[in-house]
Length: 310
Image (cartoon, rainbow, N blue to C red; front, side, top):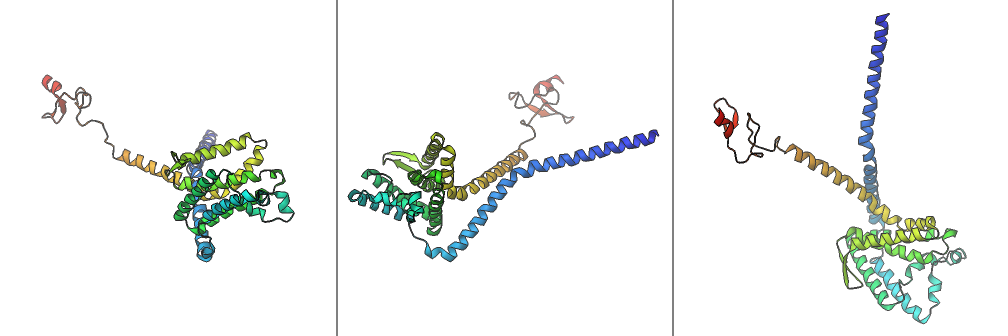
């Protein structure tokens, strides 16, 4: 009977140890694999998106409008000039949900042509800046990819603006559109110096962070934070789809590089921080650099004090 009890107890211990080892393996795998799911998914999105865009560009690249942001900025300046003679013109192109549903479908896109300001100096600065952003983005991407980015931003904002609760947010859509274009520029050229108001030099990345903070403050302080946040997030959707997977993939790459660098440094680090050590008293060339170390006839390395005492 004792043997049976011992055998049962022994097998229960073995079973418990086996289950414990399985649990530890699962935990280990979860610790290793879960953090890699998101970067792997981001890389997959990035690669798939690039392949789709490359395929579309081969088929429809000839349909792209070159210098699309220059055209937008130019028409904004033209609209501003016409509004000096006919102020009612701006009323006919502003985003208006009720008018769109009534049949004035041109308002789905005409709102982009609203001038960014009424002051002629600010209109000029905006136009020149849009020209600069267009040339930089088009040079880095291509006319087709810039067209996709700009038109998808306009489409996202136009569609989300049809929500009844956002009926009065038409003018805010222009600011989000500018932010989407500038955030792309600031991400691709973060160290580009921009002269704010043509005077103050500042890097594009800091202006980008300032713009993001301003959008965040606008959402938080609005009377309907959820709806305004939804409007901002939808308008920035092309930016998020374009750049966030690259951010995640880059963070993973930097982490892997840091781990490899740490392992390399550990592998090449000497076992001890000193070269000579006395086998008698333990002094070494780091703790006592004034001492001399020699190997005696017995093959023991001793400092000069211990050799003198032999």
